[in-house]
Length: 253
Ligand SMILES: [Zn+2]
Image (tube, rainbow, N blue to C red; front, side, top):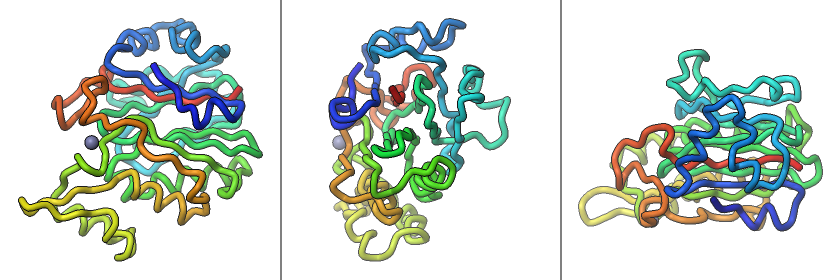
């Protein structure tokens, strides 16, 4: 397990992301005593509940109030049969609620409002980013919790880097619906084989900046999941079971 120093060393918030050595952590979350998992020891703060996004590559955001946070939502990553449409980001202003996403090449995006003490985490794949998950997460932080984009800090956990994420031309067409030409020119780099390299972290950063987050408040992808054997990678290792992905979380103190 590791943390984002950019957050933990400067603000009253704790972050965590797991690697291939932490598979038992996820198993621990499946038990009734989820809040007593090794995550709590690592985070050095009492957890009231652990919530994991019901990921569908959607642009849906779940606002977690103190009331909702009391109910542990531990069932929803089993294919999401119990919820409609799922959600790929979580936001709260309640201390002690660990908000989590799972990834294996997609980017976990951590967000924190340094003035209003609001935290969020989002699962950012190319479909979700194209669908607006980043701007909608910022939108829920501001509209529902009174956060201000100018006070947000943002960072990405492990995910696929700009040098590794090969996509076809159809992805450019999809992104052109959301990103202006000058940004597309930065996001896609043509390869010799007719394919393109996509800088997904930069795409998410463009979305953050468009929403008003200062560029200097945004940190890039922590480590490339495709290049590092320590992290689950869909592209390197094939389809990854839900309990063998990287778990990233953020909790307010
Ligand atoms: Zn890479």
